[in-house]
Length: 375
Image (cartoon, rainbow, N blue to C red; front, side, top):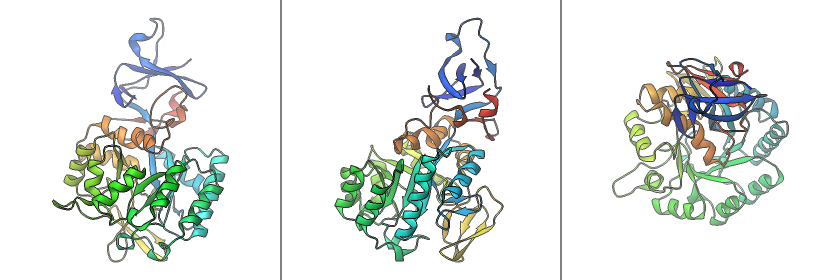
């Protein structure tokens, strides 16, 4: 059975040297250290590279020229997943931003079909809205935010959606709504919110477990009003996603936040829009033209509208610009988001994991799929 080694391998959240991975029929059957191998076994050396689990992106609005809000179908989900796989993201949550109930139902149908057809990389779905605060809407359309909680729950009940993440503003929904979501084992995250520190803490007591694109579309962290950001720092059982593109968060702010949260609670997301994985320099959202300029997506008035990056870009930014250890960045881009959404078979190298979920990273942080080499 083929046994592979390389400069370092990401095992159990740590970068290990002198380690190996054993693969059979496209599946990892064991991992360990070279010292434990029989003397007559000579592993195949992949060279001065890092072998790691593929990135897990829990917020992908689109890519490859596609916006899921425009066309939520199995075909578009498959195309985006296929495109992102080439960029090192081997597992993702297709994300629908705030829209009407019919569009939400279409997205649920599309994701359920994708899961039934075992579309590579699709873990479930992320509904970012419609239960958001209009005062923190960003580019989301506020006209859809007065939605029926019960109709939304009914849609979830009618479909098998795998890992489901719902971003909401706790101050805009009933306490019963959060209870209903948590009861259904749905991951609840706070985002596009004006909630107070106290309101967030109360929601966390109900089962809220995360914060969506920390700092963005929420009140600032103040000395006498810690708000959402302060709660994210304080609540040790909660996770926070961040957009590490140099535009959404100042590098000094992001570096401080990541130090406070640590790689066990911080997650890199792309918040990717149609331009990612394509040569598009504009797209439309709710009929408004969004331009891609200087590596960011903006409306005509300069409002940020998602991002123009993949997780591979975020990894590069965190290591090269923020000077963070690669080991921590890999945890934030794979292991931690997988744990957050309760998907334990992604984000790490372990027995039973499919080898096509592995990536190779060279010293320049160029990413390629490992599967062609693990044969």
